[in-house]
Image (cartoon, rainbow, N blue to C red; front, side, top):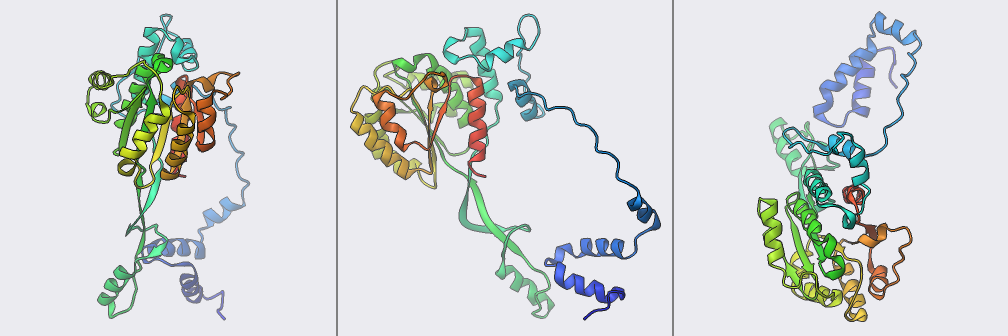
Length: 342
């Protein structure tokens, strides 16, 4: 039993019950002293009614302009996004307009917007533990080392947590004839992703699989995209999704799908090869990766249904089925990827 009227008794009792870290002792003393000996001015202020909360304006509707302004960093290059009348109406249209229907001038604006985007990847916990003041596990080795300085008494506690790292990211895009209108813009998107994270592997396919990771690592975006396009021999040709995924699973999956990778496939699902093979390879790929995301440019149409054989065969093995037909869908993808680690 303690006497709540005795300051010293209350202090030591509260310290034993409420304080679990040595580095918080000074903060505890400050709060306790303030609580125990409250100035009269503060007593009077507490008796006064609280002021009315200020009225808040209604939130502004989402636009790509608001998002880019929020994500902008000091030193970022300014982007010209106004139309000839110097209004933002053109931006409002561009962010919802399909990539396949854009003019060369609009595509140039989209290219700059993609370069300005900031991507946040899903994180994973590793087995390795690191010192962390906010950790939930006690670092026993450090506690014992510290105790030797105080005659074996553990006066200072230490904490640790698991180290977190970005998940590897694998991009696989369809550049066949049915995807030709979006193909070069997708390379711009791939370039943005490749320069935002450390572990990114990029592949494209038509009738065969081609790795373009090295080309997209070039610093100049135009050179990188041109080099990647030159490496592809089946640009705007046929579509062999199943065969291409088979090559990936046999030759690349063990190397690039380690440590819980996220795989992103971009295709409209038109398969000219064996549909049964596509289904088999998709099932294998889903088992090997942390999450399998399929982006379909046709999904942005209100009347679209995944009825073609290739898309129907792949759908049961997809974790996330999302559109990629305009700038707004890219922004929604960025938000989705950022939430995967939460």
